[in-house]
Length: 398
Image (cartoon, rainbow, N blue to C red):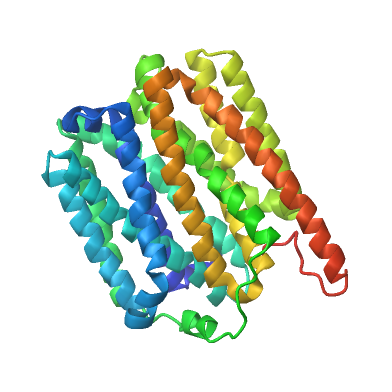
């Protein structure tokens, strides 16, 4: 831990993920109020995630060229400027198209920070790589927990836009930190490799998993406040605070998931936690009661907590010479999945009502399990082909 605390780049990563977690989830904590201000239908509310992911995807597509032209430090500074512009569009307008533009600008900045800093920490760390990436991602959850608190305070003040004040302050702190860091040229080293990226069955399996994953975490974090507003019991907890239960369990789970995966292995961990997710979703689907729904949300947070960081590290182990590239693809498919899945959720809620949420969770858990079983088989095949002497340590992410 002492090594981590001396790493300025790691500190920037933790603050960036914390700020992104707060910024993303304050929108969804305030979704009923934002829908009312901008007069959005459920389907139009689903477009919020679509435009967010469009901005995210643009950052990934432009990553290589922007890095070549600007290098890492200048690119992060540009991302800060785009982020502040996006926040300005969101809080200073009442037109839904300015809202969409502001969210897209913000998505570009989220993608730039998350993609570059995740790959940078993996490539620049000499040891404890998995622990650093897991902990950095845990700060996204901590920021997500903070978002409902800021949302509730903003509503107490009387205007949801006040929830963005702490985010603006944090972005300016990020600006100051980035300006005072000299980043290592790790991406320049990767760009000099002559090997082409090995597209194949493993890449397809990873892509399928990452495409499906947003139907779980993104949906829980973004739509449950609307579910609770319509079908929950606000005498138990107000809708603006309810997603804090998800992000709290999610963050606690993320802090302990790495140790569990290290003990039992990455793939066994993934299979067991997905089975746990499936069982919880089935119980919620069978017993649609506010208390059951809230407990299910907490359980889903625990079940999903370790999936993303551990799977990200494992993807890098499949492609050790292309960590930056596979990280970009990883976030690209995450963005595409986030964009399509949340649009799908919005359309389903428009047609069948927000009560469709537990069915969506159950269906996605089944699909995730199928993909993981297929990927597990592919993993065993690759180990057999490489031979035990020179195969990578698949069950270690350190």
